[in-house]
Length: 290
Image (tube, rainbow, N blue to C red; front, side, top):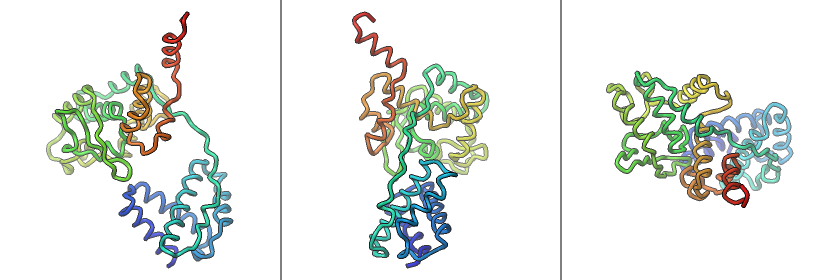
């Protein structure tokens, strides 16, 4: 089996058997194409751990450690698949150490900032009502933007105030929607156009088709600028904010893990960072002379 054939079979396996997203498959395709261009399209059986090290070393000056770790993970998965298919006997990427990643605290907004931020969209147009509903929904549920734009009308139960979400690996989970977010969504749905090309989608674009992740990124950036907040904030920051505020108000880590759709509790533990408000509250509750 040639390398291009193995790549196509691997990507098919990711998509069909592992339920990987289009975004993941696209990234893996790009990473593998980059790797085999570097090697000069050599035969799979001739690749050694030294080749993998040389590839990563050659890109370390232009890319972050996080990107390098992702590319190494991609190569490990690909070669593991090749071993499973008996194309290779050993995985040449298995002995290459993962770059040590710096642990970054997630960026988030405080409660006053969130309140001001979600009220920025205008309420006199259906697009403004849509934007307000999007910001409220992201903060209220903590879902990813890809999960938000993929949500359909039948996924939302207004009576119970829940939304059925399809997360990574097409895993489903039920997310509560707060009263404020639910009211904002109802206002938007009452005003949005009727002649839609994507009638099932909850959130649609100005052209009446399903909204995309990139379009949500752009509208979020516009409101960030209006609010005078750091340009480094992204829609994912509302997911960080959701988790931080839940923990600040006493939610347990396991519940937050379920709400975020994390498979591993270790992924959720990044939100256990101490905010000044939580530190002050603990001090006042615990110190005898607070």
